Amino acid sequence: MGTGKTARKHGSRSKITKYKKKTWLCHRAKDTDQIQEEITKSIETGKPIAFEYDDDLPGGGQFYCVETAKHFADAKGLADHKKSRYYKRRCKELKEEKYGQDVAEWAAGMTKEKLPPAHGEKK
Image (tube, rainbow, N blue to C red; front, side, top):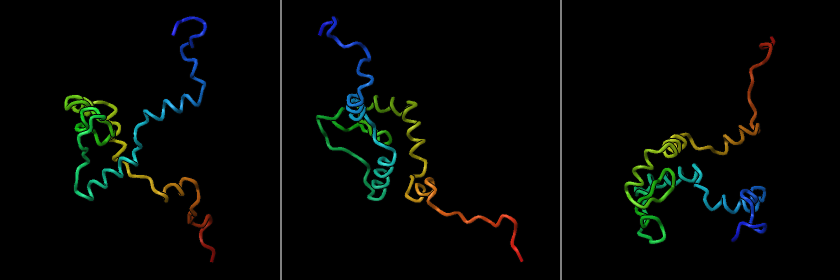
């Protein structure tokens, strides 16, 4: 672990895609549609999203932010997080309507539009 010729330079792994994918995927947050599904399921069942005590999770899994899908060590950390820009942005994204198959087809141009006649009706 020296700083000689055999040590890697800073940023030398930046072009290695295998390394990028490995490091990015483990820190990736949940997608908005997954969180929206969790929220709708909890509303349908009438039970809030809660976790049993788990030593592996921060704070034993008791301080969980539903909107960002993150665990916190204590209540103060969770309260500070709810004041952050990231949390407020995520809440705004979650308020938007979920995309469905019909929207995807419309965006791809797979639907037919009924246009009015260009020169009026002929008699």
